[in-house]
Length: 265
Length: 232
Image (cartoon, rainbow over all chains, first blue to last red; front, side, top):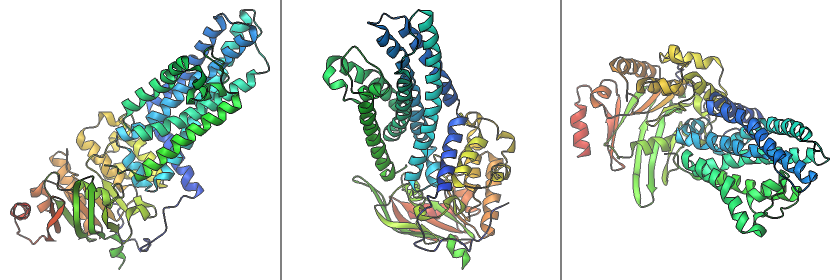
């Protein structure tokens, strides 16, 4: 029996708000990472992303291209295909907490819910990086070896920027996933909706409305990752990065607002 | 004086979900050193009330405090209040230990607490197994272990005997009795009147979101009669 009877040190009425000091924040991030690491689905999704990107790069290296520069850019831009894994990780890490009702434990331990949301964003940003960097490396390896085997130039000066942009877009997608998971909460609905919307919906819309696509979230993200689709011109990489970042920030702010106000029943 | 910091006070508490009033002008107290039974029919508003006490649901009116402080303003809340909720749930892919470790990290508690609470609830052997393989009774014990992580002076329990076998029920009874005897506060909702009658010191009965009866449970009182009379 370790229960202690009385606590003379308890807060006075009207005591201070829950602490959000730096050690408290890093603890919360570690708690989120511990939960993520302990779930098998996390390991599977993190492990699948690099081979998936390498396969796309291999496919693009063999497809006909208008010229070598377009071929090289298209191959390395496949590093951004890791986005779907990063987004799913964010969605499942957040909606999963509502599905299994474990969010109750998180809010009991940290009633200042804004700190929980911030910790999830930080944790899944890191996990997004863990998806993005190996994926960029796998794309580079597969792309460079297949391009040179096919007798094409293997690298151009644009490649570092393409890989960096792809990494940034993948990390942003992880944050977007956290926000969408918190907004939708039903894990099945959140996974289905995000995949349909961000993998197909937006893109399909772009085929019909090529002038609009560059302003949509996925159009902006693809520009950031260096993709140059046939359907129409995209923004420059930096413009896409700013726009996609703004979309993600808007979803994150909305998710935070809703999370703070919502009853957990 | 110190004991009063662990009192649960509910004052004029109300909650409406749209046009539906779940809890209406509810006031009661759960004092330290006692077990307070929180009773009422299904849909009476018990769970909503407990969730307001724990800061999970925002009251429409009134307030719920622990030692005079609303849950959301408590510093290090898991060291003040432990909670076992009816829908207490776990990620099925996590081991009991991993679940406790995540909560422990978030609450900034010492690492040794995980092993201690597993032992306290008799789950040492199952700690490394995934929750998917747990029985309902084992989940209930894991929920209690989570509540005890911060060694809090207050326990709020929603149907804690749910799924426990007779051994478990007996163990829980002994545990709560000893816990309250040490000067701690226990607020427990249940439908199992015969069980709670054996250990409760105070009784709060609600129906339709309103207080119907509250007071000390005098020895020899038939709780079932009292309950049926109050909720009629």
